[in-house]
Amino acid sequence: MTNVDRQQSETPAFDLAAVQGVLREFGIHGWLLYDFRGNNPLACRLLGIAEDEVGTRRWFYVVPAEGQPHKLVHRIEDTALDHLPGEKTIYLRWQELEAGVSTLVKGLSTVAMEYSSRAGNPYVARVDAGTVELVKEQGVDVVSSGDLIQRFEATWDDEQWRMHQEVSVHTNSAFDLAWRTIADACRDGGSIEESAVRETIMAHFAAHNMTTYHPPIVARGPNSGLPHYETGEGDDTVIRQDEFVLIDLWAKFDRPRAVYSDLTRVGYVGESVPDEYTKIFNIVAAARDAGIQTVRVAFASGQPLTGAEVDDATRTVIEATGYGEYFTHRTGHSIGQETHGNGANIDNLETRDQRRILPGTCFSIEPGIYLPEFGIRSEVDVFVDFDGNVHVTGGEVQTEVLPILAKY
Image 1: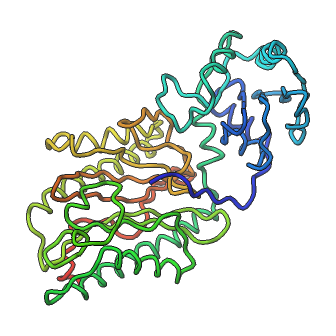
Image 2 (image 1 turned 120 degrees about the vertical axis):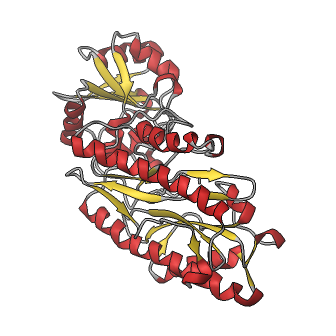
Image 3 (image 1 turned 90 degrees about the horizontal axis):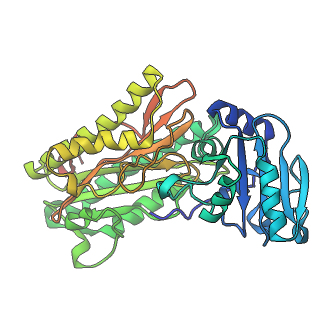
């Protein structure tokens, strides 16, 4: 799904001590923040610049790991960064801008920018290539700020972790409601539209003061083979007995700073599940569990772990069975106040996500196999707390395709 649901109650104030602490944590000498007309919302949010305060001229702000920051702003908008600490240099001509950049990075051997080497991670790459070239010409090594950004964009506090656990109770119970609705409608030759099940889930969300930027996916049969299927209406969306159903739902509380729960489960409208579905589910579940175990082992041993490495762990399981070509998306994504957050994604397919999985962050693990006849995905949320404990949230992890009529 597209990442369009950012709901922030306010733009947080800039915290110099926190930024410098993160720079020292990752051994980077400085952070060079840059924006032109809102092209770098990550920098703007970090510096406390609201969307309606974005200007029309280029600015730079360098934060060294030690010492005071420095600003470079245009004469027409010379107050653009006045709310931030540090000295200010004003430029007018482009030659003055280039000279100002040279002064900003003087003495810094390594600076972080919203940049990704060889376009490996577009979620981080917000600074244009020419600006990066200009900075590199000053003799400094430019590195990605991806891990730094996570500390401010993707890390939860205790209140958010509590809200996630609380909302996960209701996303979990939404499946019970959905499966029961399907069972009641489909017994004795009946049927129900995918959209009717979807609306039942949405009513459940509303009853529990939950919100979502997009309704859930309810997909029967061949529709479940489309990873981003849009639930619809018509002859090919009617759920009947002896049909496979995939439900993918995500929601958060309608509260400031609330964070999402995002889960996918599958069922079969019958008393027992045919072997063709069980076979594929077991492969997907094994891949999911391999991803979870990779995270647990890394944090138990204190070893750094990237999103790409977790993707590799799940993908290897599916590829070994010969179904690799049918696993057509990344293993998972960062979760926060948006369903798709700004932390490390579990991805070494669509992008090269070399960002580390950090304590205090949450992400999905959701491998899938998508065949023309049906698709199976099993999605859980994983939160790593600040003590390195790995939590799988959203109720019991699914261990089989649910035989809906037998259970409900």
